[in-house]
Image (cartoon, rainbow, N blue to C red; front, side):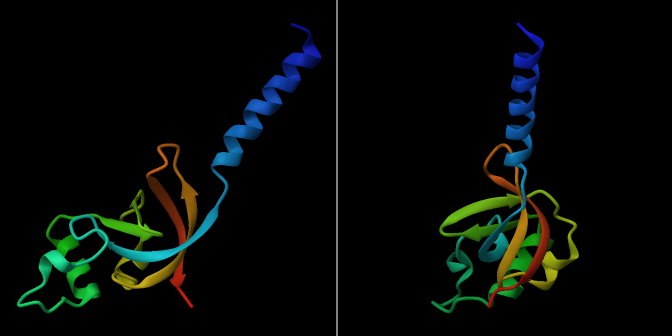
Length: 114
């Protein structure tokens, strides 16, 4: 293989790898891995629990924070991010990187959705 072809192939491979890790912004909700898309399993007498209180209680009980956007549930790689507790149960704009598994996001920034 000639040197120019090898250089071109290497550049293409590196560009493809970094393009996948580019930050992206999603709109969705911070919740927990047990309740997932809604908190109906924790409803008492038909009354839905407060989403924030439910999410924080479930996480305290061992669940993980997750992000739900357009019906898809994403694991969050950085569970120690303080904003997760602040925005638990809330709609947010999340900026971060989708991990290679396509199911996990490493969050960089969370802010209230407008």
